[in-house]
Length: 128
Image (cartoon, rainbow, N blue to C red; front, side):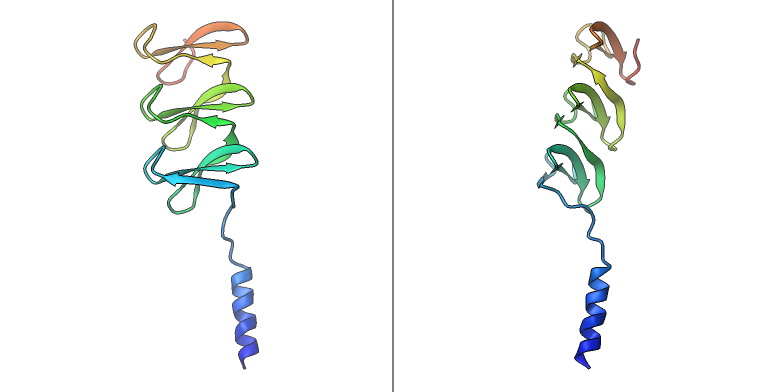
């Protein structure tokens, strides 16, 4: 009678999907409350404290939040820079060779370099 119970338990556990696995998982609450930095195949992203992927591993680097702009973090992908927000959304796609801090030249603007040319983005991520 034990065999059917073991078989049932094996089938049940075999069908359970534990979610994605990562090469490394950092400590929670370093970048954002209830988020941990994850690394997979050399790329970085975030999971939350429920194990859900908030940002898929796609960036070669992710800075701390709130350095350039409140609730935004600078990200790098394929050598280009952009921003994600604290909801895990890409608010400025990685397309810039360089991005200066907001407010240096003008309040609410950041100088950016794209294709060798310099312009500005505003606090919504739109080019001026």
